[in-house]
Image (cartoon, rainbow, N blue to C red; front, side):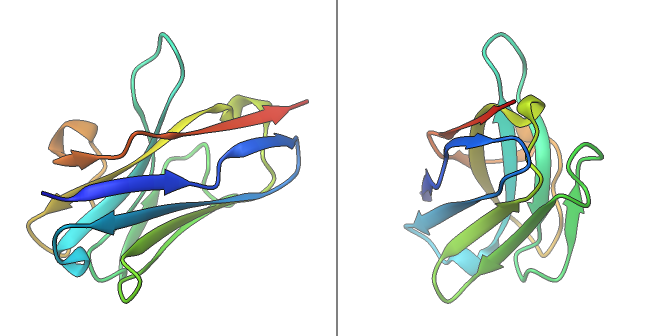
Length: 125
């Protein structure tokens, strides 16, 4: 079992930045590919970014590429999402997720095994 806890959300103005963190516990963090998703009430869970277990590969949704950066520190069992130039449409609950099985990038929600409870990001215009 992998336990994931997100932090770093908050209320910011458009154009500002935030850094989300996802701290993992329970298993060997470096064995798991990780991802960030977001979900707004009434909508499905939307892929944001993903990173392989070693951190050597990353992938981004078109809507956030060039603004968001995903990274991880396996020594600290923590993954990050640096969000720059935030827009009101980035307002959502952000979730981190983990899946074991290889040094790959996973972009579909149903393939992830473990999920955090989410952190709210609100961007005002």
